Image (tube, rainbow, N blue to C red; front, side, top):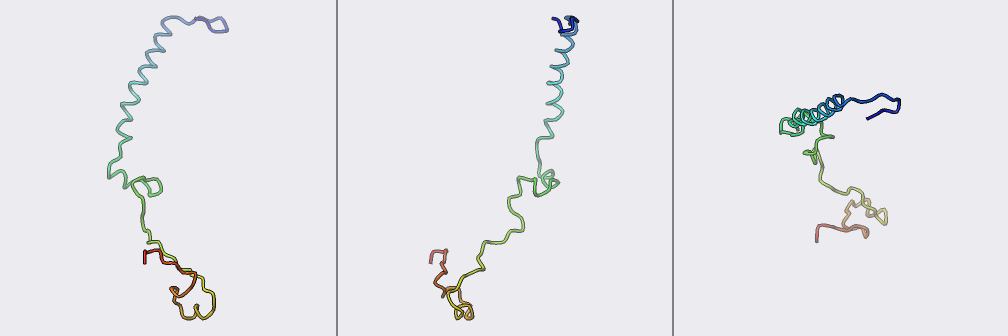
Length: 92
């Protein structure tokens, strides 16, 4: 083999490079394979925004507090069920 500048690569250099290349693929996965496994203790150390095990925390149940009324009388009575714009979604 030749470089563009005319220097030749010896067979010994290719053998050393190949050996180091293969050695890198053998050593690297074995040293980091245990780091990819999350245990319950590790998931407690991860912040909530980065932890996939936390789906909801301090969540309120969904509700609607804003109900439009068509007149002032309905607002004063404070019964959202009497508004023509009120729709119950609980099946009744």
